[in-house]
Image (cartoon, rainbow, N blue to C red; front, side, top):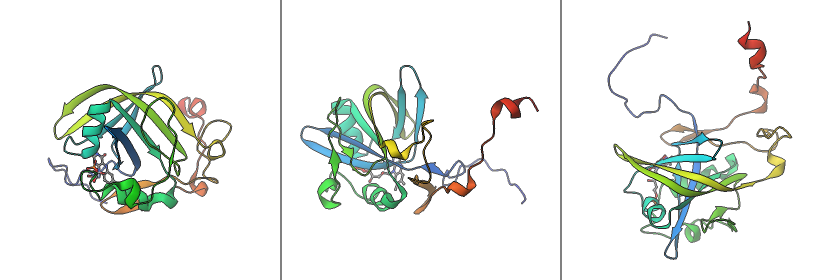
Length: 192
Ligand SMILES: Cc1cc2nc3c(=O)[nH]c(=O)nc-3n(C[C@H](O)[C@H](O)[C@H](O)COP(=O)(O)O)c2cc1C
């Protein structure tokens, strides 16, 4: 395949697929959820997680008010939920009611945790910075919810039990299959 070089990023999908998450927040009695593909782990100690959210999102206002957010990782069967909360505005609709989203109790914050999530982080906001048309929100993870059976004894996601939602861009989603897993020992490969 021939490569072309351009100075524009286009739809900015070159670095996809990305795991699609649902970021949740609540403030002043209002709860909301939105789809977020731009997110990352930042530090083990303290445990920090970052999400990149446009300031015009209703969810951003709730996070700025409450200084808390949740990051929910859902199985592929729940991809429709990602599209639902990513295609609607919390300003206009109560997404939890409209899409019949069940929640679990949060323990260290007041953020909604999605019952369907195989893992979720409760985060307390430690930094909120403007970067172009998005804000990078960094949270300290204060509680981790996880379905034990979705992970192996090494704490790796068990693809026989749960399939993550990989977002390809536009309206396209795919998942990972157990058959494609390769085990490559870095000690061995680093010395070749
Ligand atoms: C799969 C997917 C990923 C998305 N990722 C992001 C993201 O990383 N950051 C962001 O600001 N918006 C992202 N969006 C858009 C928001 O989810 C969308 O604008 C949503 O309606 C915002 O809801 P709110 O206004 O209720 O907060 C994404 C949408 C989809 C469908």
